[in-house]
Structures are given as structure tokens and as C-alpha cells.
Image (cartoon, rainbow, N blue to C red; front, side):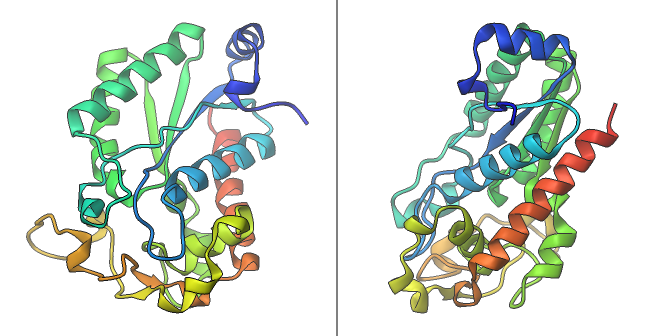
Length: 247
């Protein structure tokens, strides 16, 4: 199996992959509270997991850049254990990461998001970065490109929420040693929708502590490793299929 992780390749190998027209996937997540049962790195871990699986599955060559482990997470700060960036810092960070990728010789970049709080900002920043860098910068969230698998797999909810059935299942599949099984009974909260999908007529930012006292949205008690493997495989396949179908 060919190596796909940027940090495990040499500079020469990366230049060769760039010359061959490989796509670079840039996973971005967040480091934030995920209830009593999951580690703070969930969004970072899962975005990278899907990207790595997709790069291995795809017929078209792809490289997975080092993950961006910090995003926009102000709404989780009240719980502690959380890092958050300003919008200007996130923009500057992604600009410099993408610029470095382009200077190696790559021409196609797709930012693959794993954190709901990043969605709206990344869509806007992709436009800014495309203009600044004179190269099309694509953006998706793994749970958006893999939406069909998410809807077909989950039982207690139709979409990913937070520290929920979906995220907990994927962590049980990919990083079972990091799931605090003894805390699962406490890991249940109200249903939510992402800001980008909200039906509210006016958007106001809300701290997550106002939504859930335990930092969970959805029901993690329904999580299983089998569901997690299906979610990861399905989202990765959807991303790989997109890579193979795109010139």
C-alpha cells in the first residue's frame, strides 16, 4: 500500500506526487470538550481518519496533509479543555498552509472538515483563498460528503450532532481505547442542528452550556463500533469517489 501521509513522505516523494497531479487533502477539526466519555481530539482524529482512508481507497493519487487540530470553538469554551481561534487567525493559518502546499508543486487542494463550528467560516474562506492564491480551494465536511451513509447508519438521529451516537461510534471503531465506556450512560443530550442547517429566522451565537449541561447533543448510548466502521468506510468511499470523478 502506497504511503499517503505528508509527514511520512520525503520532500522528493512529495514533489514527484505533485508532478503527477496528486490532490492534497487538508483535514481540519477542533480540540474541544466532547462530553464525559470522549477525548477533546475527536473532530481532529475523525477528519484525519476519513481523509487517510479516502486517499488509500482512491484510484487518483492523493496526499493527506498534517491535520489542523484547532478551529472555531468559542461555543465550547465554558466547559474547559478547549482551544479556539479567531476567524482572522484561522484564515491566516489556512492561507499559509495552502501556500506551502502550492509551493511544493501541488495544484489541487481540498480542505476536509470534521467540526460543525467550522462549516460556515470555511465556505467563506474558500472563496477568499481561491482569490488570494489564484487556485481553486475546495471545502467539504466528511459528514456532508458522506451524508447518505450517515442517514442510513444512525438509529437515534439523522445527522451528526456532538459527542453523539455517530461520533461515539466512529471513535469506538477507530480509537476504542479513548472512549470512556463507564461514562456512556451520562452521554445523552438534546437534539440539535448545525448553524448552517438551522431553521431559525435569526442566528444568534449560543454557548453549548446553554444547550447541554453535560456537553453532549444526541444519544451516545446507541453507539457501536460496527456503526462507526460503516460510517468511516462510507464517508471515506464518498470522498474517494469524488476524487476519482474530478479532473
